[in-house]
Length: 143
Ligand SMILES: [Ca+2]
Ligand SMILES: [Ca+2]
Image (cartoon, rainbow, N blue to C red; front, side, top):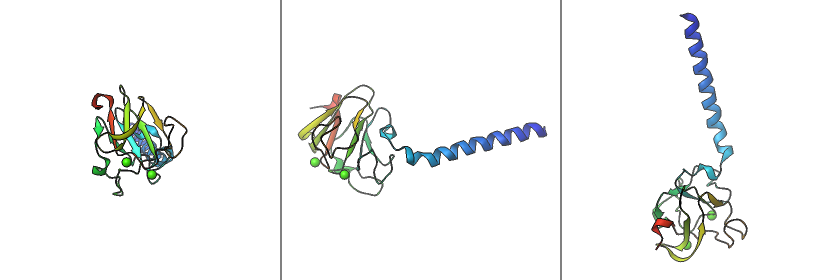
């Protein structure tokens, strides 16, 4: 019995150590993949981060008609603040609009495509969209 107990304890310790290293490693691995599968996400800074956190994103699975209505963890509005975007949807393209309720100009991203820096004209979004996004929709909800 004593041997079995010792083994269980060492396995538990190993699992706890593995979890701990995962938790510590997470901030260093901020990436578009922080966006949940089936959703599309924005981050306030380039490189898929908000205040250096990859998990401080704003996501939607159907549409976000007005980014004024959502805030990052530090209470900053999602409207006109995004500098990186990722469509982690599994089926549909997304459109990202300049104004609320699909107003103004827009750009389109296929599924599993993002742009890590909207404040330039390279990458998937070929024009400068620094701090301009105000609404976004998966294809089923396009006007
Ligand atoms: Ca920004
Ligand atoms: Ca805007």
